[in-house]
Amino acid sequence: MKLLITGGAGFIGSNLILHLHEAYPDYHILNADKLTYASDLTYLKPLEKSTRYSFSKTDIVDRDAVRQLVRSFKPDGIIHLAAESHVDNSITGPEPFILTNVLGTFNLLEECRAFWNESGKDFGSFRFHHVSTDEVYGTLGDTGLFSETTPYAPNSPYSASKASSDFIVRSYHHTYGMNVVTTNCSNNYGPHQHDEKLIPVVIRTALNKKPIPVYGKGENIRDWLFVRDHCKAIDMVFHEGRSGETYNVGGRNEWKNIDLVRAICDELNELAANGPNGDYKNLITFVTDRPGHDLRYAIDATKLENELGWQNTQDFRRDLRETVNWYKVKYGF
Ligand code: NAD
Image (cartoon, rainbow, N blue to C red; front, side, top):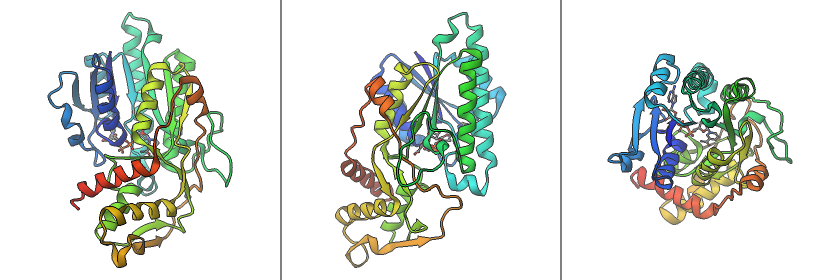
């Protein structure tokens, strides 16, 4: 199996490559990544000497580069994670989101379609796995869960760009018979996430004794999923998911932002016991809310559990502690 992974130098991609490299000793993995500010190849240093892993600096917005990539590597499958991923950045500057997430996904699909069609092998045997987000469904009220049949209602330029790419992927299955699967997952946490995201921000600012910014009153709810559980879900869906289907991946683990921030502070109080007045929670500061901030996301992962036997193995407090500890070391504390 020659497996092309896009965005493998990012948070989820680097965790996924480490997982797949270990789980499938007969796979060759090519990581194609533009290396934006959000990437960090040092996480893949353990694979530096591997003959089954290689890297290509490729911008998926560049159609010629994508063509060259696909035709030189000749992938049997693709797991597509490359994206602009930070909602706040999509509000201040949406253009790269439209280019990478929409046009970049189209470029990959189109170049794969052409190459796989010409390969002489059964077109349907090539797999294209698109990694997307629960944010495409918009926002929930106090109750209910997102399922695979929830209508799309994206609210931010980020989620709109992901929703657009989901639709394009879907169309390549229905129109051209391409063997595609899509996963829509909830908020991930764990090692390797970029410093700009909520959990790293909380840990870094707290350890530096700076105000910990919390949007609005911290009432927004997210369903947190440990990144390694997500990687196992991607592995399962890529290998066993039904072509043309989408699968939701979630942690059944809803936290109000303010409670999550408090839980991180509690971990820090134990791991780095010198918070101001004995408690890092004293640093929590409410700041002006994000425009159009979705209130609540929560995933119903029943389809993935029942059809493919996926199990969410996270123990939230244990995995949060591992995460907090990982960033504490990263930030030099
Ligand atoms: P990330 O921002 O950490 O990594 C994205 C990677 O994509 C980076 O390495 C970056 O260099 C690369 N990239 C960006 N633009 C590119 C381009 N034009 N060409 C090639 N590479 C490019 O993101 P992540 O958190 O690892 O997310 C991975 C995927 O999962 C994304 O598609 C995202 O939408 C989706 N997702 C993430 C979460 C989450 O909680 N992190 C939740 C739901 C869905």
